[in-house]
Amino acid sequence: MTLLLKKLYNISLVFSLFPWVSFGLIEGGIQPFFIVMMFLTLLTHLLIKQSFRRAYFLLVIPLLFFFMNYLNIGSNELVRESISYFALVISFIFFIQYLNLYGFPKNILISILWIWIIAGLVQLIFDPKIFEFLVHSRGSEDRGVSAFASEPSFFGLHIAAIVSLIIFFSQNKRIILVLFLGILGITLSASLV
Image (cartoon, rainbow, N blue to C red):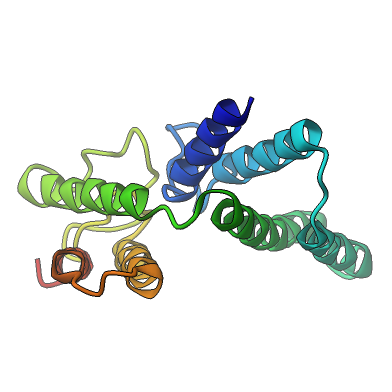
């Protein structure tokens, strides 16, 4: 059961590092798939281990937001904003839980960083719309590449966030390759390419 739970955590982590991937099903920005995976993973952990962490009480925040704004905001906007708050809280709880259980996933993050950079290079070399079947992209050919993000600026921010996490949590401070990949990713997302 523990091995199954670890695999579920790793799959959810990978989904969370591709938040714009929609598999062509939904148009728009960040997709709900990683939120659902994280929620199911945490729920499975709760059912298997039967341990409830204090961090789970943070889930009250989106519920409070929803109830406080129910009458003030239109239904579409309310749902969208509630999901955004829920995504933030569930991501925080998931990542804290992952760190407590399995430590920092440096190898997974470096692998994901490579995948994003290679996707950006593929877009640069072949066609900026090559991943259109996975991601609804709002970018244009003169704005840089977006890899698996919905637009080039999100690609650059995502790469910067992954690199920052690796640098912040890394025990080994000799991470020149990670910095190089980060600079390459941010360059690919720029309008210069």
